[in-house]
Image 1 (spheres, rainbow, N blue to C red):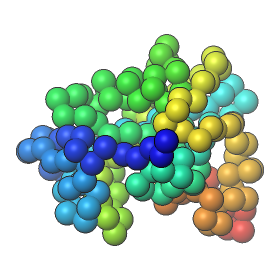
Image 2 (cartoon, rainbow, N blue to C red):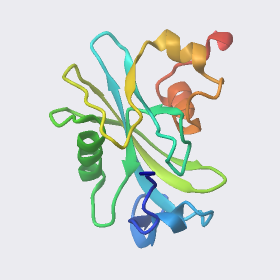
Image 3 (tube, one colour):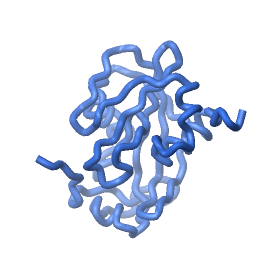
Length: 174
């Protein structure tokens, strides 16, 4: 059975401050409308400073097959950012007991969509159980990430956060 994203799923539409001004379907938000919609990202570090990354499955409508932030997902209609972060961490990695620190909020624009990204981080050493929405995942050392930056294995969103927010410059730039 081939999986795919639900184009009828409803997302809030927000202004650049995050205030909800309407709603739209996933299909509309990802179809070039540039309707600004909120997403959550959670960077999961272990005690050794390694960063967990998920591999996006081939059936995803955005960036299939690339390595990405440990937890990333849309805020659903009627849901807060914090509720979405907890839900996505549970669904994608089976993580429930964690303390998240918000480290950034920024606008991300691609050819197809425009997102207001709420970025969080946590240190977590419990069991990580990737859900069926992912094609697995693993912990990466900072050196492994630096060596792979710019090679096309990561999503543009993750590369932006790795080099900007997390401060991981590519090895060639050091």
